[in-house]
Length: 118
Length: 108
Image (cartoon, rainbow over all chains, first blue to last red):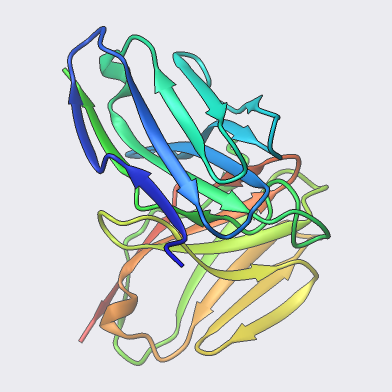
């Protein structure tokens, strides 16, 4: 099992460019998440998908869009990149059901994408 | 007031000692609590989950939860240099809220 995979690992964009970050999981998890991590700010939730076919905003959704393509894949799109979006982006997934499951249960993270916007 | 608070550290302990990492949270209805370990340049890795008051042990790790005091801690026994990392506390209410982490340094 590869767990959670993300592409690309690194990306440099110019202001105004667009890009899509890809995420896939092979653990048959129902819920998937996108976070950004900035120094001193911790992990902040951008968007999440509690189950296939649903997406919801997190704490910092402005400037981003998401697509839950199927149960395995959840992509994050930056339509017009800004320097403030320079960050490390993590995708995560979790099982559903029970106290230990459901949205925001034990989450497993991908390796991350380091994005720089100049 | 931050929803999940951790001392940023660094917390420095000698090899073989017990490292004690603390976390407080503000949402009284929180039900699930997690500790993640994050090595520099890597992604967070889940190491402990705790759902009820008391202690939960897993190898050298012990998680402690006190819901009345809104406090969760992680003890690492027999600390090793390989334990040097940032430890993130995460609290689940309607979403999962992460603290900013405590950096642990274990020196030989």
